[in-house]
Length: 348
Ligand code: ATP
Ligand code: MG
Image (cartoon, rainbow, N blue to C red; front, side):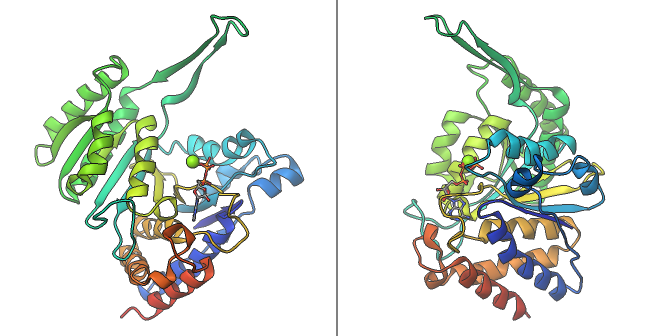
């Protein structure tokens, strides 16, 4: 697999995760070969580019990529975020973003009863409000305008929807489509129609339609009933941060970017960014990155190794002495990672 540690806490959480992933693969009777790339902010400052011009083609040679984070306060976001991570996602057409959210015994959260959450957000990853179409007009007049055009297409909706239904079938068999088709009457009604078509072909999966405002409430009040949430790019972005907070925050949220059925590498990354406010202090929570690595192991045909990582994370998190600052503890990144590694190594 390819590894891009990136900037800020990226290299800290990636270097905490790699030994755990390698050890889990070994436990499962396999070997994980890694090739590391120094792409990101430092490289941008040295060369004017966050990654080499043939970077995407280099990645195509791998089955999977583990990515830390990019972003530096002294480099404009578009150079790094667009120059690297969004550029890679777009060039590889990684159409679907998968964000599992589950509670962990021992981790206290904003919820009075933190346990029992196990859901996955499937986010359309390429279009919607994020296509960049629009503009600003009438600057410095009382009639100044900002126009943002959302684009929702049948192919993009269909592939996210099919992925969500297939995933639900391996879980509790429930898809909740999240839209706002009562007010946004063009794009989101297309979502409604396509999802209804796919639902009719998949009668074994239960499908419901929930407006995004109602879903925000449901996530807080009844998160345990939710299984697979199928979301547009914008709603998936917002709801996955909300959902992450319910299980301990951004330090606990893994993700995968993939093209279902496509012959391109899938990219696994913690949902969080480079977190410059805590970088370099050995306090970042490495769990989001490790769980992204566990998804990677599942994806490359080592589900037993993925399970070993998740079990080891669960074992460590039961001990509050091993919680990092974001979870209310005082453990360092390295202390938590060492205990997770030890748990992997003693897996029977
Ligand atoms: P991006 O634009 O890349 O999403 P961001 O500015 O939204 O980045 P993040 O880097 O995700 O922000 O950080 C948001 C907050 O969460 C920060 O206060 C950061 O310290 C905290 N945070 C992020 N990742 C972690 C982590 N692994 N462990 C602990 N705290 C984290
Ligand atoms: Mg953010």
